[in-house]
Length: 131
Length: 131
DNA sequence: ATAGTACCAGTATCTGTTACCAGTTTAATA
DNA sequence: TATTAAACTGGTAACAGATACTGGTACTAT
Image (cartoon, rainbow over all chains, first blue to last red):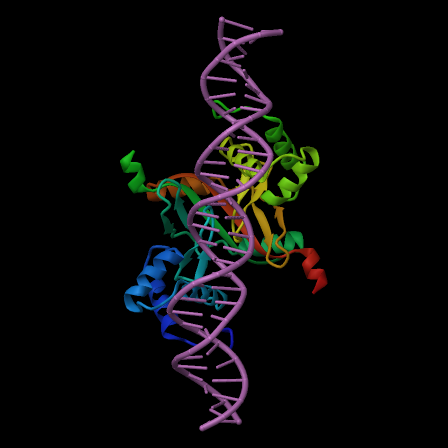
């Protein structure tokens, strides 16, 4: 299942642990800053490279909706997100994932449907309090 | 309703018509190429500027999931999309939009939910035939 | 040991998009 | 219709996030 010929380097391990240990949905830059606390010599290119290979290996998710840069999620299982359009925060939602929609769509259209995504937009509680 | 102090220039009108008259979900570059057929002097910056103002005015939609660049949709009403992960094509889906999810989520969480998006991913019929 | 290759840090480059500026066009008013 | 203020324009430079390249290092299997 996993992509062959992949090594678990110190750098990759650190990046993966950072993502698994945060509930935020960090940007590559944030991961880079965190990784440098552990491995001060790590380069930004390495962070991007490993984020991509981890995505391809299905160990993390890339979230790239609505802004010019990606965020990453250490939880590779499909789940829905809420995006605050005021502060940009991204949070997980505790909603059941409607996998049956994929099957229905596939049968109705003849497309091959592999996955789907859903995000909700609005203002988070913090931003609502401020206004 | 409309954003104040907005002028309907020739450029904006052409861009809007291009988007209304296509079922594809074009990129800014494609819109630029089409617009130049009508207005050879139009600049890429103007295309981007007007795409943004049209989005803010609610006349078009920006679709920016899953790739490094945005696509635009001349139909501003919320609807769901299918994205082919092989060829990048984007197509509209004829599924009912589940607005009730927004209300449910808002009541369950205290968030203010303004809208939501859903995309399905997989292979389109053309790409399935090829493989 | 040796070869082969996945990986690294550092840096240059790429790409989609935005900002700037001086001149033009639009639309509201007289 | 003429005037006018400000929104808009084309052209270009700058920007940011991401990727490609380079020369060198560290695994891994023979």
